[in-house]
Image 1: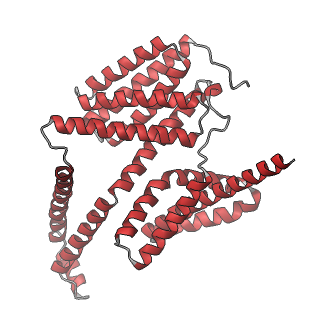
Image 2: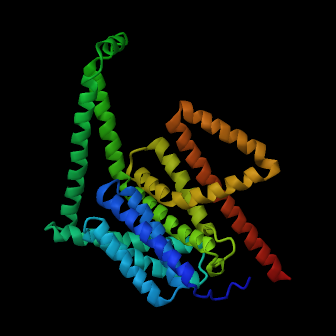
Image 3: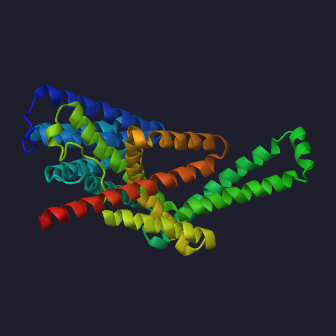
Length: 361
């Protein structure tokens, strides 16, 4: 197949893409306007991929009509939410950049990074505009105070729920705890301290979690573009036959160093500024490495030499989740990401050596 071939315009496929985009816009707007919000924003990222396909393969007039209908549907189906409509406009811009990256034969990792930067900056801009329009200050001190106030409100709400839960403990259960010299007051104090520690840590890790979520959404958008292109038989527009995440060797090395620094700092100074910073970096770099780790895991399952040992490790992991859920999941994520980074780094090294030998000839 000639990958420089430009796909022809087909009205039937164009209508199917338009119908798919409209359905996604309705579903996303209804969820954001009235239900969970989370599902809606994820669906919008799928719509970004569809928009990029429409711009790449259809007439530009068709694309303009789709964009207009997309934003109108988002506005009215979400209960006339200007915020949702503006975010839809940001997604259109992201789709244009994704289409441009694809036309330049960019790597999938670069496309994910481009879309992630676009939607994150766009979302922050829209949120800032709507926040300022409501009469709030955008000064850093005021924003920081508002953030702390939000977490304090969550703490107060959770504290009330914990008190209700502890007060609802039966007398039989309290008698059982009394055998171990555990009182209701001790249970309440321990639960409140645990909750406050968890929320304090969540606040400190907010930057890393935000970047993680942005990368996840960007990956969904780019992968949706790829899947829709394949489903509608427009594989020719993809930069590569196997268009996959393939980070650079330096990014893998950085991830391994950050992971090592985070683990070491966690042993000696778990709540230090350096440890928190490394953990934020670790969370931010994690999505791509998780994807690479899954790719490596699938390859090991397909390889006769590694299949049995890989299945054995997976069985141990599942068994561990039944008894030590948090520990097993943490260890599993660490091993998956670390292995993914190591596999890609070794593959990049092998490619570099092969190029060097080829040039020497």
